[in-house]
Length: 165
Image (cartoon, rainbow, N blue to C red):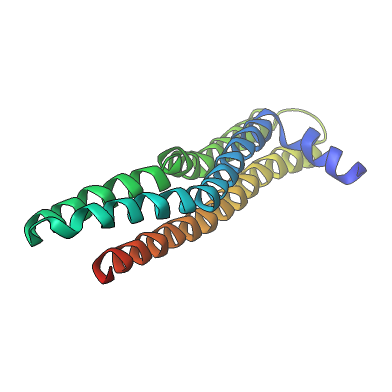
């Protein structure tokens, strides 16, 4: 625990910004996972209702109905994904900003006594913020890819059910 507190103290304000943005991103990711789980039965019910009405329609109208319904289902499943992508893109840049800030701090303190300790502290801050930005971004990237893949599987299942039915 003491090591973790030392990490936050040493890393600086940008790590707190990275942590805050990461919490927002992970909250959005959990929301999308929850939405996938609970919206799928609603979409299934909607698909069944549409399937009953499409029986008397010409083939072209059935295809247009399928496209419209799949588009709406995709929008419902993808809700929140653009914000997750934005967070994933911003996090490494916050880490890079921390790197630049830490290096500036290191170089501005070169004229002080105990240069090695000052330089090591600034470089440590620089590397810690880079690490925090990259690790949180990579975790978000993996989970966002997983969400996209799951959304596509759900849509493909509905497409198959619509064509089959």
